[in-house]
Structure formats: structure tokens, C-alpha cells
Length: 175
Image (cartoon, rainbow, N blue to C red; front, side, top):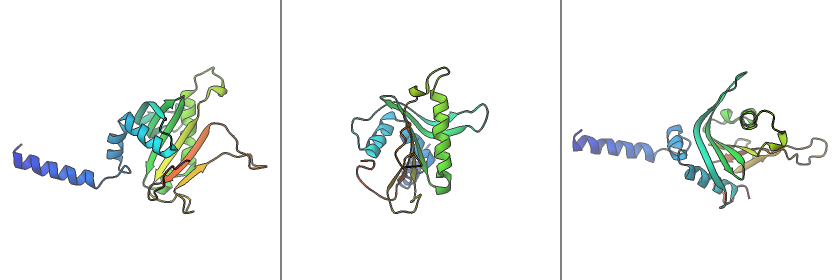
């Protein structure tokens, strides 16, 4: 390839990447292939500089022998044992609460070994990073807790859903 063509392709690539955000699947995949990048994003989300990621996977397929499988944008395992699923989602409809519920449940089925106690299930966070306000209440972060219906007490079972509106900037998102 001639030097002129190389410079032209280099300029095209710079322009393409400059216009991308982490909402773009290809860039997200490249950035989050680096475990340290996943760790940096989660540290920012949880406002916890000590948060540590031991493993991470992008475009991770979790098959379901009896039903619908999934392909998760980012799945990460932290220390102490905790799992994070990060889903950048441009289309708010695709970030539906039912999807968060399903993704959390399929992670649970994949990480709990046969014969093990349910008490061994580690915490799982399903985090949608959306390009808009999912619930239209003007907040940058929504943490969806499970509650006891009769008196609104928190039901602590280790399953968490979060929605982050990437159009709004706030420091210490979960703090």
C-alpha cells in the first residue's frame, strides 16, 4: 500500500474512532477486552477504588439448553466473588427490566454448580448503561432493589439491577 493510501486510511480510522462512544458495539468490544478497562469503569460506577476484577469476557455467550440463551456485552468476575454484567444499550426498549431479570437469572444458573447450596450464590449486578433516561424521572442512576411487598423492607438476595443514564454526569454514581 502506498504511503498516500496508508495516510488516507489512517485519517479515515481516526475519524471513525473519534465519532464513536462506548455505546458503539465495536468500540465497546475493543475497550472492554482489557480487564483493566472493565475494572476502571466499575470503580467509577461504584465509587470504589479498591474494586478488583479477576476475569472479564466480552460478547460472552451463555447457552440455555432448555430455552433462550444470551450474549452478554461484558461479563466480569470480581474479588471477593461477585459478578458484573455491563450492557451498553442505545435503544431503551432493549434495556427492559425483564431483560435485566433474565440476564441475572441465567448468570445464576451458570455459576452455581450442581449440588451446591443456594447460599453459595455470589452477588450479581446487571448494569445497563443507557443513552437516555430509562424511567424518565431525571436521575442519572437507578438502582432497582428487591423489596418485601408488605412493608417495603429491602429483600437482600444478592441480585441487583442498575440503570445508568450516560447523558447525565454525576460523580460517585452509586455512593
